[in-house]
Amino acid sequence: MKFVDEAYIDISAGDGGNGCVSFRHEKYKEFGGPNGGDGGSGGHVFAVADVNLNTLVDFRYSRRHEAKRGEHGMGSDMFGAAGSDITLKMPVGTIISDAETGEVLYELLTPGEVITIAKGGDGGFGNMRFKSAINRAPRQKTPGWPGEKKNLKLELKVLADVGLLGMPNAGKSTLITAISNARPKIADYPFTTLHPNLGVVRVGPEQSFVVADIPGLIEGASEGAGLGHQFLRHLQRTRLLLHIIDMAPFDDSIDPVAQAKAIVGELKKYDAGLYQKPRWLVLNKLDMVPTEERAKRVADFVKRLRWKGPVFEISALTREGCEPLIHAIFRHVQAQHLAEQAPIVEVDPRFAGDAPA
Image (cartoon, rainbow, N blue to C red):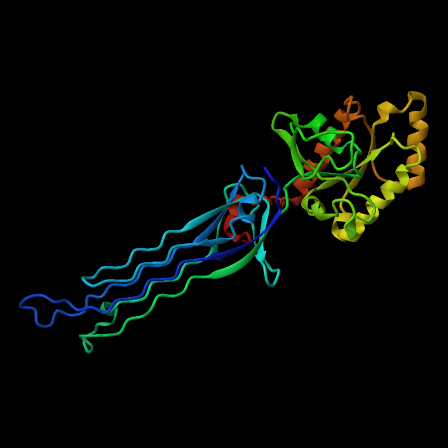
């Protein structure tokens, strides 16, 4: 299925039906009185977060979505039927914003979450609503209210705990294949990965985290080089970034330090918040480096990069060093998750009534 992470749609909730002016006509009933019913309310437009979807491709080719309008009221005290609602299924992580102002209206972050994105109009009143002791034959009615109409921008940001960052062919897809159940395409040419891939890493019983692999970045991505930095938005919700470094490039003229600095520079240009996220260095493809040279090459790389954070030495192909890495990631993600939760304040049951709300 084609991966689409941005789409524009026009939605329109149903208009309310008009009220009716009608009077009761019956033999021997000279003054039957009003019996015009109310109009039906228009249909709403709902959005639901579907865990089985991972792309907005359905909305790329189907832009307009309209709910049914309510039926008009009729005589004999008959109210109009309400218009049928429509429900739009969207992937978890979809951001719904106003296409004209850019204001974020809703975010679908929980599987199964349902929100009303356009409210249908209320039905108008029939003349039976206006009868009184003074006005016994009212001819007033009200029209139905119009439903909401909106132009919306849908933007998908995948929900993952850990994001993989690096140059093309650094081994990101091989790593996510080695540690998770994801099976992205792997080949020996740049930009094999063309869209984000998600994988669930199982550390133990009921212990797991989600990893996102995005297409590789190159220097000048902020100006549109390569695939640009259009996929960096998928890393904005992560708790940790893994910077994957190819320690055994095919071309000896390539300097991994210069490449690493270029990636960090692109990250800073795109989003300062993303640049400030916790970032770990993962030195990959060390199985292709002679054993006696590994320590020296790693120490030289860290020194030239002036890196002060955590460093992990792995080989995604042979899975060497992957086990300590995933356990360290899980501990970090779990600690951040607990820190984000509100602290539980224990209240003495004797004074529960006096506790602040």
